[in-house]
Image 1: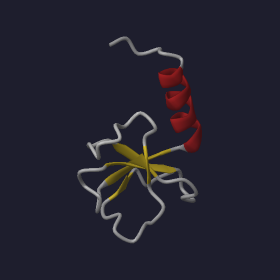
Image 2: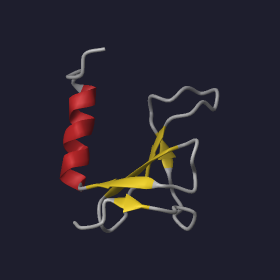
Image 3: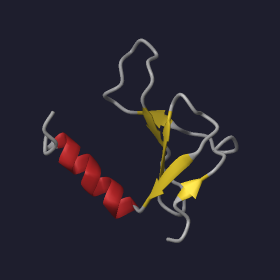
Length: 73
């Protein structure tokens, strides 16, 4: 995967917020499923981009590590 950043995400639809985000509309991480080159991840404060693009396997490993509480606070 040569592309690592999507400079402008305005044309991409279907973003979803992290399940850990608060219900009060606070800022959080958003991901987009189904993107052909990997998993785009962006900050909800910047809905037009940029987005970082992660290989699907790497993103899956990261999510698993977060769920398993492998990152101390």
